[in-house]
Image 1 (cartoon, rainbow, N blue to C red):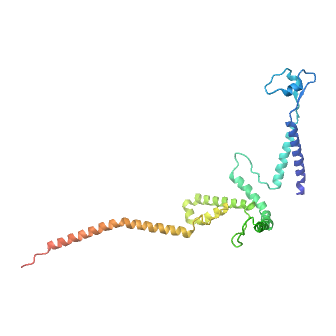
Image 2: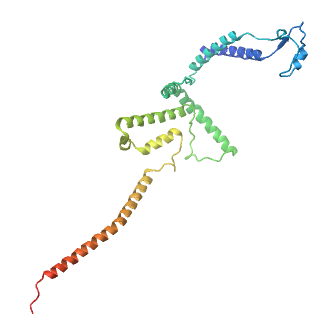
Image 3: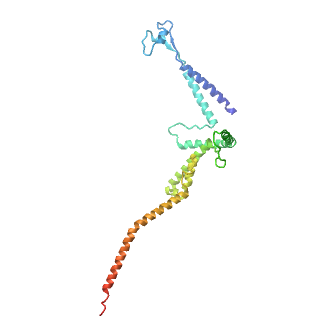
Length: 269
C-alpha cells in the first residue's frame, strides 16, 4: 500500500483542483464598462429577448481561461486512475467496438488467479463467521425464524465465488460447443450425461434443481409409461387386422371342406 500512497495523494489533489476549477469556470459573471451608458441594473433586470440601449463592446463576461491547464490535469488524473486500477486489480474491460468475449474472459481469469487465494481466505476466516454471527443475532432477536442446522447451511456466493461459477459455466458451454462441432451433435447424446450437464448449469447460475429438473427415475417412469401407451395403441390397431385374418382363415377352411366333400365318391347303396 505504501508504494501507491503517492499516486493516491496526487489523484486526490488533482481531483480537488479539477472540481474547484470546474465550479469557478461554471460561474457566470457579466461586467459593464463604467463609462458606458448601459446601467448594470438595466442589464440585470432585462428579461430573455428584451431590448435595451447600449453597446455590446461595453458588456463582457468573466472567463477563467484555464482550459489547457484543466486538460493537462484531467489527462494526468486518467493516467493515475489507470495505474491505481492495475495496482488494485480492478476489472476494467476495454471499451471498443471490437472487444470480444474472449478478451473479457481472459481478464476475468487473470483476476480470479490473482485474487482467488485472498478471497478464499477472507471467505473462510471472515465472511462465514461474520454471517454466522449475524444469523445467530437475528434468530435470537426474532427477526428471522430458527433455521435447522442439519438442513440449512450458509454459503458465500458473492465476490470471486460468483465469478468462478460464471467461469465454470462458460468453460462447460465452450466444451460442449467444441465437442458438437468436432464429433457432431449426436456425440453429446452418446458420450455426455445430460442430467449432470443440467445440474452443473443450474449450479453455475445458483439455481436449486430440487423439484425443478426431473430425476432419472422420473424420466424412466415416463418413458415406460409412454412405451406402454404406444404398445396399447398398436394392439388396438392390430385387433381389426387380426379379426380380418381370422375371418379369411375361417373362410378358406370352410371352402377347403366344401371342396373335399365335393371330391369324395358317392357311397353305393
